Length: 335
Ligand code: PHB
Ligand code: FE
Image 1: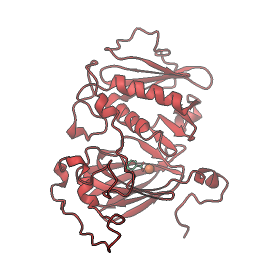
Image 2 (image 1 turned 120 degrees about the horizontal axis):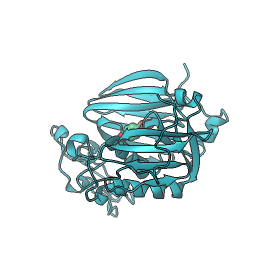
Image 3 (image 1 turned 90 degrees about the horizontal axis):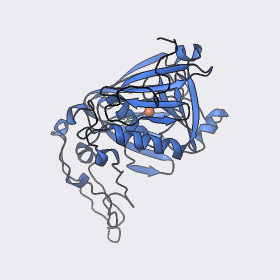
Image 4 (image 1 turned 90 degrees about the vertical axis):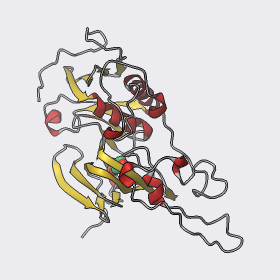
């Protein structure tokens, strides 16, 4: 790592070739892209200019999740250097602050923003930097290239909204979500997933109260990867199944315990200390395996073949402060 002051400094006034892309500023951070890279520049804690470079495809895949998930739970690391921390009314943007080497060299920066302000800049950047033909939510083999000079946009993909159910999926009155995923095709990796529906024999009078659908058939038609959907919500218990292919585009740093159930195929996880990035564990998850990620870790998954994963979240809004006060554990179980 090079801690020398960089010549990139302030991108807004430099003479780089923007290839038709807009540059953005957010507090003491600036962002610009060229044909291959996203360049992030900032002033360090002691006022020196510093910069970081990311492959623009990886940057846009991470930015897409951060925007779509409204900054998620805890830390969304775009890579080992930059990312966001969700404080649920405000969001910190950081560079190097959770990278042990950069932190001890004092070349890091953290700055807090009202959620609406950082969201507005991130949405504009995602819109301007995503070219026609590239879908940041799609698996790499199922979309075009993110590279090159600016050409068009993919507003349809980057503003994709969640389909919201108004009551139990499939019941009369739930107009929003059809359990055949709006007739989307079965993904090439899930050609062997049975598409039959369960039989429901409701007692007279309860026909409009009970329902069941084939979750595997539903997931087999998912058009996106690494994007958990809230499929059941019981108080603060959220069951979030998702289909995974290639690499989780962010390194998620937990602010609470989170559970994984590998429903088919395999995902290999790298787990590390959330504050420094120091490696902690490799977790190899095969069909049927369950794992829990403690609140002190960060993790990133690798799925060689499109697989189905159930993410189980505790969405309680008081959990983070309970963990800080020692009232809730950082681990799922103590042996
Ligand atoms: C996670 O950070 O735990 C996570 C995020 C998205 C997924 C799966 C897991 O699709
Ligand atoms: Fe996670």
